[in-house]
Image (tube, rainbow, N blue to C red; front, side, top):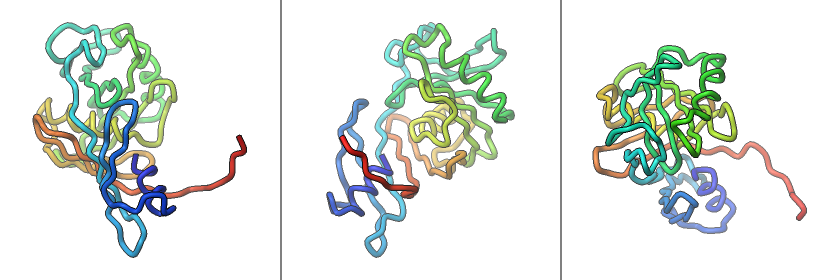
Length: 200
């Protein structure tokens, strides 16, 4: 969403600093922070999280899945839908081998009929985390905006994090803000890394 907003602004497709984008998962509203015609950062309204297990979907019983034990893997998970299904694990181990090994197993866990993204969160403080995400259907990713939102929200619900959190991902940093009952907001940069022509 941030890359798309930056691209259409800097390519003069739409020269508005607030735009509305319809996605498969719903409407998002990026707001561009512009300096001298260049987009420095983008704030995106990411919408409200969904905790109802039936709507995630997740077959674990209860009104919410928060800090729930998955005994076969020795971890506690929180699950929510932030556009797509997300599972969040708070852990001190975010090494690549651990993330990849457990991420692919939990993605396909029987409790998630449509699979799930798996977020491994190391809390640095109540306002700062390191995040690694195993994305359903894609594998180990450099960054995931919805995963960053889901991780911060799970941390707030589990009383591990405050409402404003700096998230360190493999691909860079994001700022996430969420208050109970409100929409989540994500802020971060976007960078063009290459361009090309594709003939259809």
